[in-house]
Image (cartoon, rainbow, N blue to C red; front, side, top):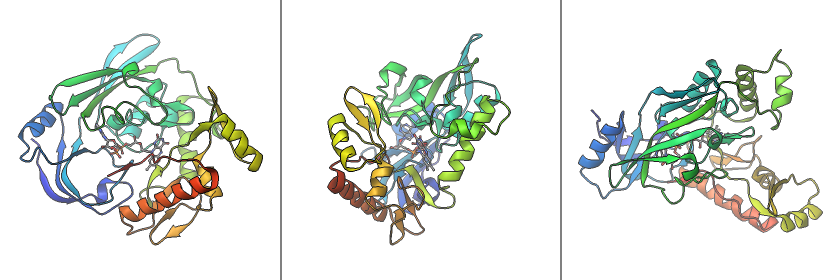
Length: 337
Ligand SMILES: Cc1cc2nc3c(=O)[nH]c(=O)nc-3n(C[C@H](O)[C@H](O)[C@H](O)COP(=O)(O)OP(=O)(O)OC[C@H]3O[C@@H](n4cnc5c(N)ncnc54)[C@H](O)[C@@H]3O)c2cc1C
């Protein structure tokens, strides 16, 4: 049975380590518990926020409502052939433990997504991605509870409207569904994806390429370049990489020859937000206890004791600088609460 706690500090529930309070806080271990909670909560008009591992949120103030953590667990095989396996996973499972579980069984498809913090239930929301793989490549179905009707709804992959760091759950359905399970279709004869960044080079030191070694290589690269939230509060990339018109990119390239750019087809080009932020002079900059990481311009950090609004202010200043210098809008990837 769930317990509704009051006035809980969220410091240990977000990777920025922001010390705000939630008026109510509840953890539910099954879909039925979530329904019971939704039906019986005393103040149904207060805002409701679903929280996973808190690795993609920035709390800017105390939360005057209910925070609900769906802790539905379990990994169940629902279909299997010689070539592939479909498994249904509880939203409350830890993402990286789940990746390790699949790699151990030689089920391929998510090894490149190793060491991304957060829960399984959150992975479809911003269509997590890294090292040339996005989770939409392997999601078969997302199961969610409709907050208004208390009914379970299933969304097949093509109904999730996946895009770069985006899905229907971030847009049309934002705030209307609680994801309780995600089903993945993984390959038993894995095809490796090694074309992205330094991955191939990193794999040279292993005697063979297999899922376990790819996972290890990804973990090693990530550990060498990304700050660990346990050591310095952060939420990974704070901004999305902007996609701009090709003509605009050509114009900028004539001014900034070193600007990296990736053709997206259809007259669009993706520019790394980290490069724009660094060029605008923000890398390693600190304002009070908030700032930009010294090695990663895309990662905003809490040096200790920062408030969420301090970090938010740094983020908006960065947006203004990038706009002034390049006339490009960079959107926040992190959810501001
Ligand atoms: C060091 C670091 C590195 C990172 N690297 C990457 C990376 O390489 N690629 C990448 O894509 N992301 C990355 N991230 C971002 C983050 O890990 C992912 O977005 C992750 O999926 C967030 O999961 P979470 O459970 O922590 O989500 P939370 O932060 O708890 O929630 C995120 C949003 O989803 C909503 N939500 C959470 N659970 C549910 C649910 N069950 N139902 C409905 N809504 C829900 C919340 O209300 C919130 O709006 C990184 C973060 C950190 C700190």
